[in-house]
Image 1 (cartoon, rainbow, N blue to C red):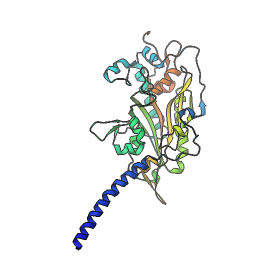
Image 2: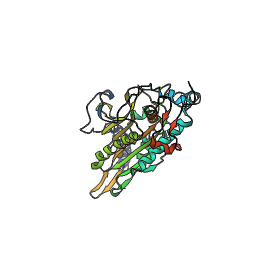
Image 3: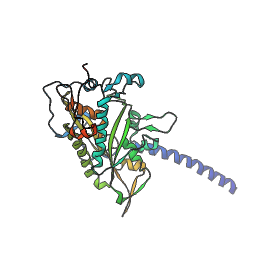
Image 4: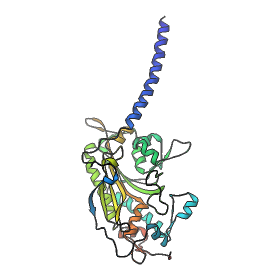
Length: 356
């Protein structure tokens, strides 16, 4: 009799354990879809059309001569071949050649050194991450729209090095004395670019593959907003040093990704379009990523979740478009900003190689 009762209890416990695991997974999935709490200063709006301009830096000049489309500038400099890339890889890819490729690399090298000089530690992270890290750094909707999955592997190509840099601290207990952790990372980035914007046929605004210098900070909650303001200002300073006028744009509630507390875009002036376009984005995510990934710090009063922030130093070739347009000369040449000349072997001008 007792043996029968014991077997019944054990069977019930086994079934309840299965139900507990099942319900726990369902609850976790629901919780992962709950958006973060916005900062009180975030403007209310429906979408990116209702983002709010904060401040302009530099005069947005339109020269008397015409500024060609950036792809045409690159082609006259024998620096862009999308036709060949179409044959090898399809739409959304490109070959950069000659001085244009060199300018592209020079900007990335300068961006790296710019951030090192700000006291950030330079990193080159893994370019692929596992699904549990992806889940920890972004929402399911963002993942589906952005990430490329490696077939037959639990690996995704990164859309930004922020993902692998935050993932570096997954499940770690940091000493409070280590904070803030200030990191700047280089990586290629891979994105599907699914949605309203899509892939651009001729140019380099929206492509499947680009390169990026990122900044990532892990800090105490009370230091988060101070770091947020420092970080977007670094991007402004970077582009102004390349003779590119910029402005900052506050993202409204309808344009704020699920995990973000507050975010602003840095936009560069396009003298060709006579308007600004995005070249960087700075975000504070509170403890959203650290909660998902289990990143804590050990303080005097116990353990706590750290605050994470990320910001673009340079994403290029988009950032290079801003330099090409704002330094384009009437004779078809491109003046190289002084900050980049040491990375270009002292070259001051890129001259057109042929008429097209």
